[in-house]
Image 1 (cartoon, rainbow, N blue to C red):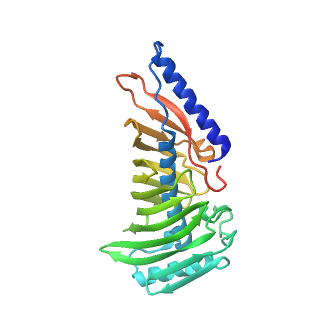
Image 2 (cartoon, rainbow, N blue to C red):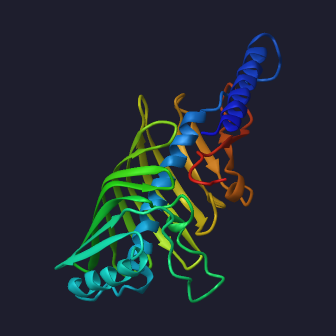
Image 3 (cartoon, helix red, strand yellow):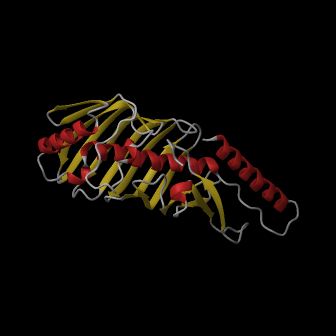
Length: 293
């Protein structure tokens, strides 16, 4: 986290602590809850990992063009052809049956100009995007579902290193279940991220719904993403909410708005309690990554 953000967050927490102390020392106003800054940041890391993994696979395989009912050999071949174009100047791609292997080994990798000049490039390919590591994509079928099983080996994306496995599953190509099992380093602390979330992409954005669990150094928290919408060319989400029980076991809501998309500033809401009759809203900042913000 950048020093200026860290300092501002520290001042914010100290201010909240002071308010709580004053409230406990005779003020008629109820004590304000202390903001669980670490919990908000971990939730941001979980959302970021979910979006980045999907974006990398989408950039490599052009998921929007895949036909889920096609033979898995055809799907793998299509992913291979797309990946060859994407990493032609900064890595290698091979195809073995239904397995596509890609190694990224270059700085400043760039896609060829999109056919639509106004279409944003995949976020992972922007400056600070995927610059090292490798991944393997295996196409298979489970009933009517197309399943892409990913193995990520120290894949560096926007200064986050992703290591582990992920499964992307779809029946129609419009909604993808994203099941993460990843170690993520490069943020404020090393975390393990697992998920059972649905990601619905469009040409300009993706929406995340479902459970994301983030295991930090000392705390494990499960987040409920509810219609978190994230434009593909934005730094952070601009709509939706992330719910979790904070370290004090308060049900907490992190809400994203238009300002959040560029600043990373979100609204954290605490519900009313017996001790605090009115709900309380406060501001917090999501984790920095790459050149964002």
